[in-house]
Image (cartoon, rainbow, N blue to C red; front, side, top):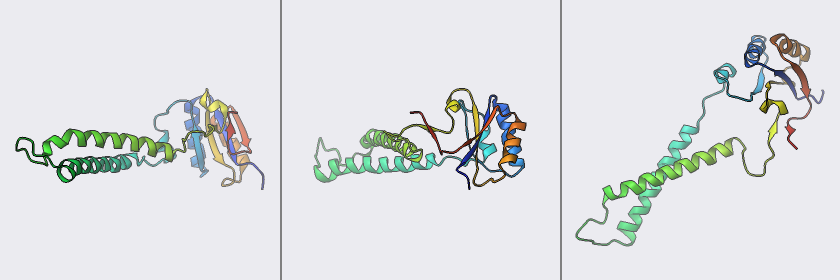
Length: 178
């Protein structure tokens, strides 16, 4: 077995890359990932990417913020230090709404950012890694896993027929910027 891990097809045009995806999928060749310098409409559906579950995390963090905000106000105003100010109740629910709302928004936003960074492995100190250095500049890259697709000549011919400017074999998993 060779050291080749990925076969990279480099395209100069996004339409050629989309045509390359269609050709590979028509021949039952699984695509590892696509790397583009700009967003391309419809590529997620073509690759079969599942929708993000970030809204679920947002709801969970928002519910946690609501519970924590209300619990903090209840504990401080009604349980720990109840004060009788002008005969008003110790648990004035309408007065709790602004603080509870703000804590909900704060924890929801911070929780979504933390979840996004954790899920995408974007933590401080990590070196940026890409398959091909030109993928962030002007090239559209299709990465095909070489271990799952053993007929490398077929993959290379399909990529070149679709309009690939360059087809290369990547022996390392990623190329570092350093």
